[in-house]
Image 1 (tube, helix red, strand yellow):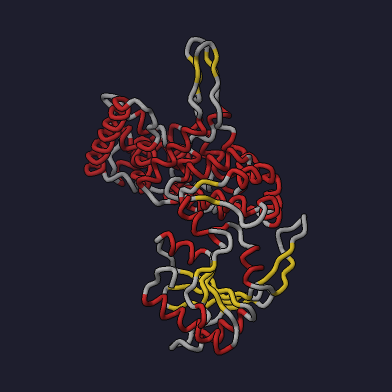
Image 2 (spheres, one colour):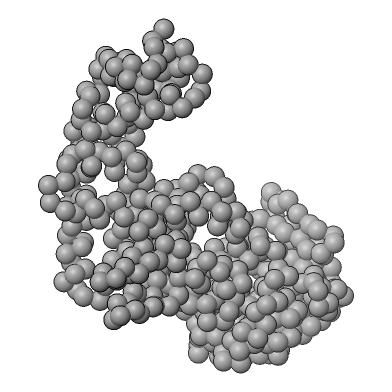
Length: 471
């Protein structure tokens, strides 16, 4: 073969080739598998294009395995899928596509291998490897995709305007591949993305966010976000992030460009963690700075309360981007709200009470919060960076000491809201919240012992203060 395959992969491809030969259907490996093999990247899926019935070929291939894998197929699209071990294989008949301006859903007719390669998004994804007996293993590369892999270039097989007009999601895919592979987008291709950017509006938010998350998950996501910004796509799909861009100067006072600061924080997190949602916390940690920016005479620019306002913005942003409205969103919201707290604890003579409050509020996400805070140091002054990191190390050490002593990271007060309602014959109401919060604060501040008896005694006194009588 012109590409390097494992024994297991060759075993599977030989079965596909044999089934295709028996059916008299030419078959080829295409797309991402070929690209990734030439790049030396691991891959667990392969796309097979045949000149004929892809669903029929999938069934014929499945019959050659024992046990026979299930064939999932979609007649409307002429595609089929089987899973062999941990390997996904998709089959489709070669096709020719034509598009209408208002839709990215093509009109499809059967086609040749050349037709199928012409419709591919980029030259690096348009390469094929023959599974035919007379040319088995031969690379078919009509657009010099292999050379573009070497030069690390993203370029369309046909005119880029046509490629992006046909399927505007390809503009985001170009940027995603540039981010994942750390490739450069060809000048003409990128110019076409800038010109065609408004056409992204016909793509569903779910598809856009799927590509956006792949950019976020890439090794150096700043590459993708910078390209989204420069192309004009980010202004359309995520305008709140674009609002961070730029620095303003008044009377000699300026502030940093919070867009590029955010990208640096994101890259810093990406160097340490694969957690998609910690990366989203990095993206959104300063999202409210434009809304809270103020200029104070003689002092300069301030962003007071941006962590609180930013936390409130997170659910709406997640809803707009069709990101999950569950514990993932709540995790990001919590980190945005808390990301300044550890900085306030780097000062001398910080009380155990302040440490307990941070541990309680951060809970099991304390370590993620500290990773975000450390990533937020983007100064080019090495001494300043070292000082901040040393301070955060001190905070970690203090937190370990207090946690070992008080065990408050996942702590809950000894009397909960339900028991408070029973004690004072209350229904869910504001007094219940006042009593519950007062007890929590008193214990965290060290004013009340963390025992049931002390908690009950405190609640009786506090209830009397606010005019609530016990049963």
